[in-house]
Length: 214
Ligand SMILES: [Zn+2]
Image (cartoon, rainbow, N blue to C red; front, side, top):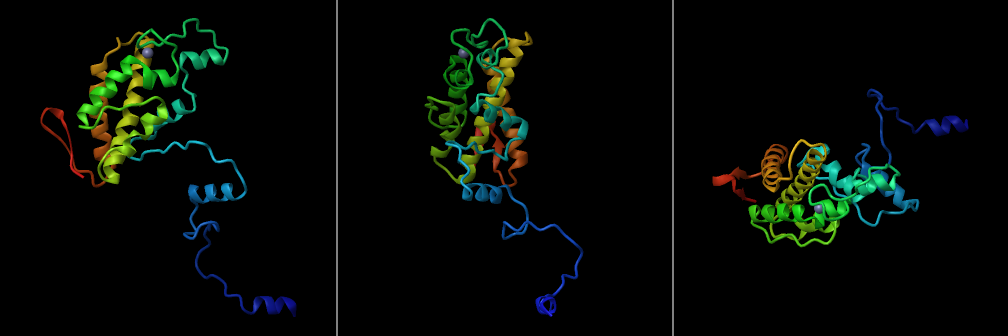
């Protein structure tokens, strides 16, 4: 009788079986819902959260993400993991120890690249004391949300290209070249952002200048 009472108001679902995620109103699984649950059960929230940028491929975003966690195999990081490589100096300038912060922020080579890229974007020079400053710089630039996202994408491409140049120099495939990193950063930023942002109004202006209308 008790079972009958429980079932009499039940209406079975007549469609095909499907998976449902019960922790989001959409009934679809989302990473955001997992984060919400983790926060509710007291999981520690990281002090700084890396924001992935969908205008560039994952293979590009993974470089700044790993750099932020000091998980790129820089010479200092390898030494800290007991890999005996002897020289820990920066392969691009040779003046300081090669950490991620140095390679992408304080190295004279990187600073020259950031300066030219800022001029190309018609934005003020990037004043950065840490990798976080570089990754957050686009948020303080004028313009629409989408334009800021484009600037953020460009910064990821520059970091990816700097790391690529560092590897080419390390393995004897190239000499350090600011212009090579700059040209690659410009062309690949344009290519990826143009193709991945569905409503980008970015034209390859005269002299390959940065011409973004948003
Ligand atoms: Zn350096």
